[in-house]
Length: 506
Ligand code: BG6
Image 1 (tube, rainbow, N blue to C red):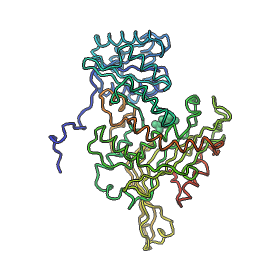
Image 2 (cartoon, rainbow, N blue to C red):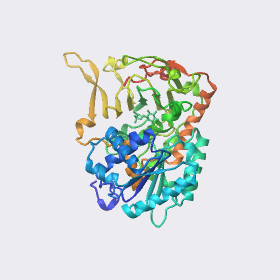
Image 3 (tube, rainbow, N blue to C red):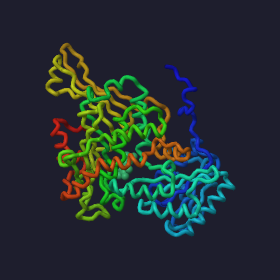
């Protein structure tokens, strides 16, 4: 059927520009703001996607003047922006940069903030539309939102919108996630709360929707009749680095499975949404998360590990327990793997294996859909398991693209088959470079476009899946050690061997 614009007045191909607004960043002196948020804002400005009066207010305890803040912003743009530094773009942005010195709990800072935001509405035409980015520990969310409310900055007023942006961790289990949400939604309307899962801002993750629903050839085989299992991997080479304060006590499962990996699972397994609008997409993801079978026996459906000291890439690296700021008796896992099943007709009996870890063989995130063997009576290689199963691999990063693995005849007079791959790489297919995840997400908040932000129900359903495993690990002793540069602990291999399968070596 041809495209009919009358059927779809909200055509998502049109240029997506942000209207008049100001972004307030709490925790602006932190790493996230310096390395991701500010560079993303600059890149949006360089792409002409922001309103000319767009303004940024940094809020923090440092005694900075506006000029000092502007200098800091310039530094972080120089060091981390995707686009080259352009004096004209930066000067336009600089005119709307303000700093407010204040604590998160005292009302004084918030009344200064109100004055500054008012000034920006008059001088820059921000229209009193404000987004508040809480790049601060979640324990501070309740007091900051309360202060915003008291200063009259939280409620939509006179046609102006007020939105709040929060970063994970959204609680540490289902119960605390619900409590945290109560504190946020006491002040902001549910549709004004934007929960960041930066994986959803990645082009390759959004491409899962395009791959599945803009094509007709995958859908007929995207089910338990043809799919043997799915492997979702997020591996990192780096260790905990300077993030001990955040990571220790949280660990791999809370850090990335609860959010990024379960979101990847939901996008892989969900049904086609009615539209690409927020409600339709979120509802389909929620149905998948709600259909994940409760883990009845965590020891046989999960594995965890902690990296030891050793060698990686030719250099000696410290074990987790010897990293700066880590408690020597810490039981925090730096590797986690799960075996899940999705109890829907489409996926009945198909295991989804999820794994993540630090200090692994190489940095790679991918979703691999592995298909059942062909009967193989013509090809002994298949019957003997010498040729791998067909696989469609969505390479999320770093080598963004899609790979299809299948068997092909080896040239020669005999009939032998071998695995070959067919590749689509973003770098080869498109001249456009991919925006950073935070560019897309900040733009979407300013536009009030919510499909890429998980709803609270998704957050709680994800904790519901994870909670029994976390409780089981809590009762266990220290996680199993694994050497840096390997693919995790032996128990993770066992998890698949029990099903007669092996992890892919990406
Ligand atoms: C974050 C985690 O969400 O994702 C980090 O807190 C992890 O521990 C990071 O290193 C990885 O992000 P990316 O985009 O580099 O895959």
